[in-house]
Image (cartoon, rainbow, N blue to C red; front, side, top):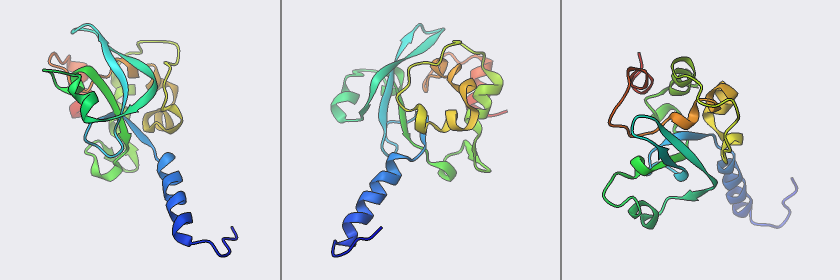
Length: 157
């Protein structure tokens, strides 16, 4: 690209922002992670929770987190964030082991791709394809009644 007389710092900032826009996202993140956004709201029941995906992800703000009131935000919301790759305990050998376990251990809960605003940049979808999406709505970050399946997915085998 011919940048001519323009300040190269401007182009570097734009290229950096564009690279971040295309960074792979973790669909099972914590609210304090880099570029955390609310992906959905937890519905369903205690024994069978289900993520109700938003039409657009919302940036995490103190005001939004405060709407969780007296419970942990991860009991109410499902978050996505930039994938931390090697800094994450679930990541090894260039792959998300959590996504692998979700697909290998959990049953499908839908046969239709859920409406998802991060699919194009989702680490799980990019790695495991549609199989991850068919299981994703049942993945809730904070649960108090873990089944043996969920425990094996979360903790590894």
